[in-house]
Length: 320
Image (cartoon, rainbow, N blue to C red; front, top):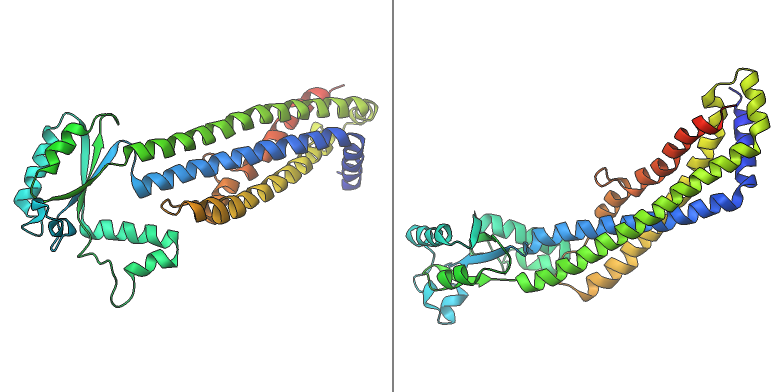
C-alpha cells in the first residue's frame, strides 16, 4: 500500500471539499459541546443526590449527648444519647407508616465520614472544621440518622408528624421542595442539551454522507482505474476514512476546549462561587465527559459519528 498516494488523496480531498468539511466540523463542535454539557449536568445531579439525598427522602437525625435540640428546650433529647429502646420505637413507626417505602440507618461514623468528604469537595475552609487537634466537628458530636425513602414525594406529613414527638428524634430535615426545584432545573438542562445535541448530530451524519457522496463522484475515474488494477476496497476507502478522522479530531478538540472553558469559568469561577451549599462537578467529571463509556464521552462519540457512516457508505460509493 503506497502511503504517499493515501496522504496525497487525503490532502486533495480536504482541499476539494473544504466547505463541506468545515460544516461538519462546526456541527460536530456544537453538538459534542452540548452532549458534554449534558453529561456534566447528569454528573452534577448524581453528586447532588449523594450530598443532599433525593426528593423522595427525608433525614431523621437522632439525639446525641448534649444535643443542641435539648438546649433549645426540645424534650425528645432530654435523656441524652438515643437508646436502643428508642431506636426500636422509631423503626416501628417507620415500618407502620403507609407513606414509607424503605429506610436505612446511618451510624455516627458513616455520617461523619460522608460529611467530611463533602466538606473536602467544597474547599479547605469547609474541611477545616473536621480536621486538626481540636476539630469543631467530631464523630461523637455527629448524629446518627435514618434515611427514609418515601413512596411518593408529595406524601410525608403523616410520617413526619409521627416521628416528631418520639423520644430520641432530634431534627427532621425535609428538603423536598428545594430539591424538587434543583432537580427540575437539572432535568431541563440535561435533556434540553441532549435533544439539541441529537438534532445536530443527525445533521452531522447527513453532512458526512453528502461529503462522501460528492468526494466519491469527484474521484469516480480514479476509483474505476484502481478497481481495474485490483485495488482493495480498504485501500480505496482509506482516504475517505482519514478525512472523516481529521474532521472528527478537529471537532472533538474544539468541543473539549469549549467544555473546559465551561468547567473553568461557568462552574468553578461562576456557579460554584455563587451557590456554595451544593457540591459541584470537578475536573475528574470533565475527564469522564471526554472519555467516559456510559454515556459515551465526546472523544468516543465524535470519531464514531464520522468513521462508522463513512465506513458503511464508502462500500457503496467506491463500487464501479
